[in-house]
Length: 205
Length: 210
Image 1 (cartoon, rainbow over the protein chains, first blue to last red):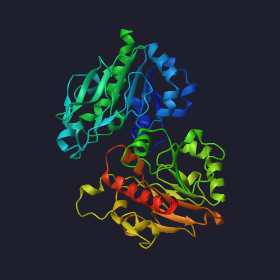
Image 2: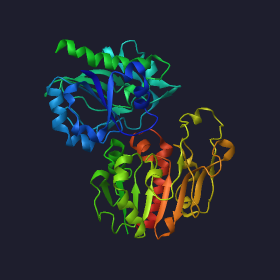
Image 3: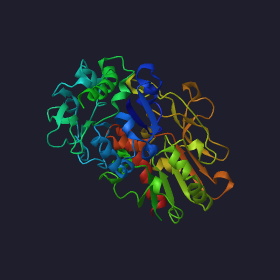
Image 4: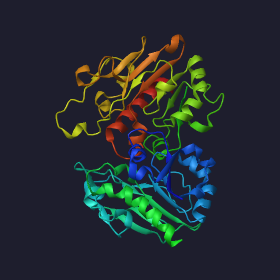
């Protein structure tokens, strides 16, 4: 089995481009154009990576395929703001109204293998600027494990859930976690650790 | 007289078109993959939101060209690879300087080439000054509106926004930019992009929705 399939949305200068050319990570995943998802046999993959630019109306139309993948024990990772819930566990994004810098502080709520060794301060600030990591939340479903929250309002910016269909769902309400792979901070650990975490599920199936 | 927008199903399209800030500024929204023959007929202007799938836009290219041939006004925003499907559009890649504003006092190179153009009665000159995604090279007959100074890396004719009336020798009008305001506005992350889109929609209100 291949660790992950990444759905490409034809956008330049994103994490996809780094990931595809990385010898270590790139050899662990396939990349197909988003609109070819319908013709893909997802059983060949442990994980499915869906990024912020994805056409969610299309994904909503592929809901049955996504649920079948989960039912087979697959892991779906979604980064972005939910606009068209394409899985039952997804709820439309809520921005933090009129946020201040304090609202954008990334606070670790629970440890998670994907973020092991990642300093939350490296998520809060990029070149001294706050807000890249998240500015709101995709409200988690009941029973989800919140991993990071934002600011004193504790807006859940990352969560992991066990979908009713099966499998695992990891959701980040911001730009692609694999987009940090070229960062020179501990944030660069997220991409390899994400693939490791997806692959590790195989042992517990 | 009315304005249609063509969108791509991404969250920032949904947010920009449906959230209270710009709700009601578009008379109709078309989901690009579903765009069909005749859909664009009768609209005074059609705006293609930034960051719609270039593959989908190329697949719908004939509908856009026919709309232009019939005398329509097509407004194409950034990151749509318009140079692969829209008439006369030439573009070159430049690495995006997302961080230019961290150095206070830096001149990012933006110049207003034709300040008397009708768009600048609505779009404030400062609202176009932010990072940009490559440079357009307007063909003969096009009116450059925002350029990047040659000494700031714009080279000859490096342009971020232009207006091409009578595009391809016909009745249509093509307005093109490399700026991507739907993405930034819909991501709640760059007030200047929101200001630019607000100005652009003030212009479309005044010009195409009277």
